[in-house]
Image (cartoon, rainbow, N blue to C red; front, side, top):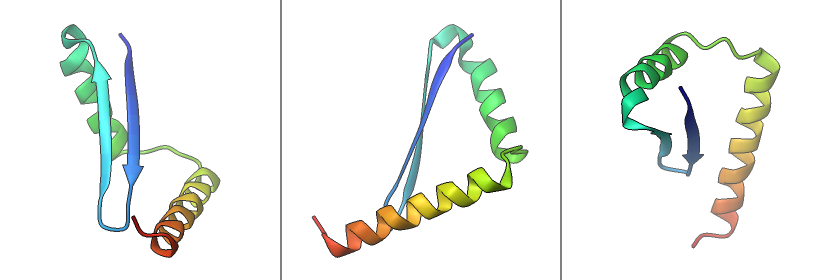
Length: 65
């Protein structure tokens, strides 16, 4: 079983992507649901990710496309 999970954010949305082979889809989707409902990430990693996301949003606001 294997998969690739990705994410992206902008000032007005966030997106998650999941890639896996169709034979593993149901198992991977159930695993993803468990991760989203019951995350076990260390608080310092969450704080770092929030900081990076906020920094990215500020950069986008300073240099709009």
